[in-house]
Length: 248
Image: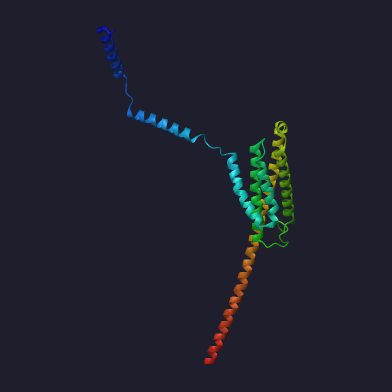
């Protein structure tokens, strides 16, 4: 059945009204449209890139790994420091297997690596700036500093044993021991901080002493050199005087 003329007329009027209504709506400006497209583009880029990377624990591992490579290199070249290097390496690797309070153990491993690097630097500077009177079987010629070094080695052994225990214990034990773990970690942090203060102070004092000794030695060498130069000049002068007197 063909549509009636009245129906066609009604449809035409409806379309005309709709088009008029659309023409009455305000059009978006070019700036607004560009802003909308830019926001959509940014959203798409963010989704493609994914969530931002975490910098806390992963960065700690990266920094400690870099320090540890330095420790391994120095430890390989200085046999006396090899055990300390091995302890730091063991703590660093074992801490990665801990499940409970993982970030805290990572921080502890980072502190260990940094401290051992400081100790190694102190050892190298002491041996470089001041001759050793007792050989390379001691950390320095200061008995008190040697005692502190032995205490640090004992602390590192304790830390390695504890980290091994925490990394290998049963799941149920991990559930009930969270706070006690933190107490143990804090105790180790305190001991390591104390050791760092000792070695930094000792290094500063010994370095100043070594610099003073070097200055005194340099002054003595310059004084001796001046005397030698004066003697040479006097000898040359005397020789020239004899030559002149013979010529006359």
